[in-house]
Length: 153
Image 1 (cartoon, rainbow, N blue to C red):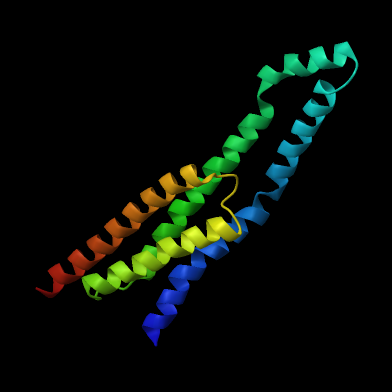
Image 2 (tube, rainbow, N blue to C red):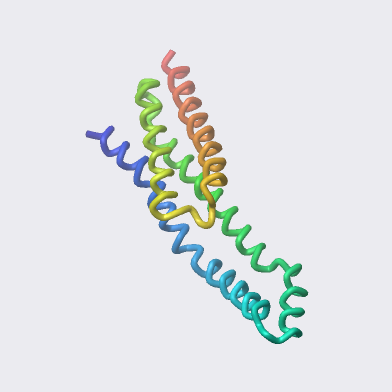
């Protein structure tokens, strides 16, 4: 029964993390969209001075910095989620069970990206972050198992 709960946890934690990121980054996304909206209004204006002002502020890159901050926050969330899921996996399980739980974590991450989305990460950026998170989680699980087996020997 405990193992079933662990499977559900390592699947559900990425979904919850993605949901928290979505609603937690709402003020940042709102600010970025307001800045983009102002720029588009100026760029699509019929007034030549407004268009010139819009393209002059294009190099300002204020909205791009906010979007980059959201992307970094999403990558950090994926890595932190992977670490938390790795800490849920008990170190005394067999290699096959550990691998199955890590696979459930990856499936949970993909489900979270598909259903909710991690910030503004596209699938390629998400894949990189998920691969790094999987390596991190696998390393943590392996180290915990090695330490546990080393203590019992």
